[in-house]
Image 1 (cartoon, helix red, strand yellow):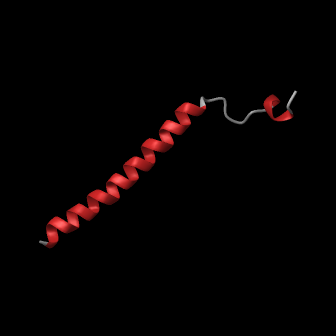
Image 2 (cartoon, rainbow, N blue to C red; image 1 turned 60 degrees about the vertical axis):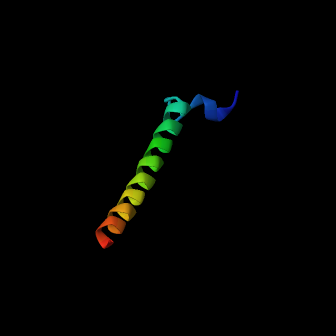
Length: 44
């Protein structure tokens, strides 16, 4: 048996971790976009 399968660090599902990463990156870029739009509206 693979020695890494005997002692796994995280027992959570990988799909949940991937979803959290996707949502966090989406929120981050949405905030950056929102700040850009805000400056664009204020600058007019």
